[in-house]
Length: 309
Image 1 (cartoon, rainbow, N blue to C red):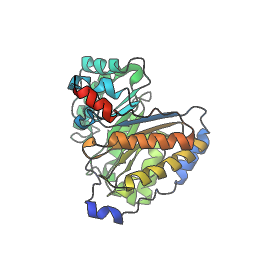
Image 2: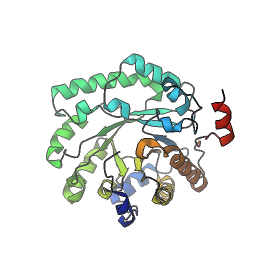
Image 3: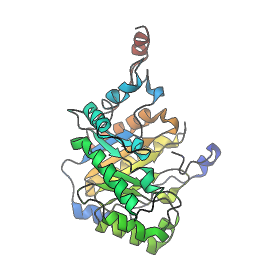
Image 4: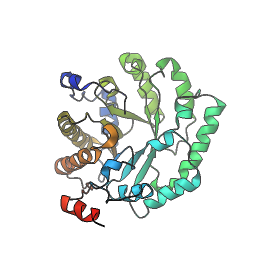
């Protein structure tokens, strides 16, 4: 993810402290009440990462086998593949079959043909959205919430267009929305109007924790669910201290009323996403007494043995 990326020498000057919970978040969680069995989902934005071969995937894993192994380590994926094309039913059926008999959710990203290259209020956007939704329905019980990401050029001047699109969104299809233009967060009246609209429509707001855009970490929960995109800095110790802070905040949210958590780990080229995800799972399980399955890594001896065959 390039959004909010900074140069290495700038990282130590950034304040990574999580903002306090705004009133809307406190009200959303307190109204929901503490969940007896909250849903906890952890994943990455891709399943096809070659650096994971020999580390998490067996040696000589073929491209077509990546997802077979991914579902053994994580219980969700931020499905960025759907941002670039609308897949046919046969492909979605094939992917869903890989997760058969597992608790696993695909969280598809709305195609950029809709989110970036169309007028959301147009007939074209409506038709493409219908086609996209018909496609992802083939995930069946493995379909998680959909993720709508708008471009950095999409400003509050277009709020009416956005609300027209969101009001037409199917009420039985969970959706989280990410806006990126700085004015969505900078102006109090705009910020409140936007998040109150999401709350009225029972839609979620994406939380993006990235170094160079701390304003995008708004901490507004419009529904008692959190969809967190955690963007790491390459080989920097702040990755771990930031996760520690998230674990503490999530602990507070779970105690108050958080019903479902989706936490996605982004790392440059996805190289160390599994390690950071494993650290998150370990810390969350210890602090919150959850039972999130941790990724399993191939030991050095196992890697050597696999390479011999």
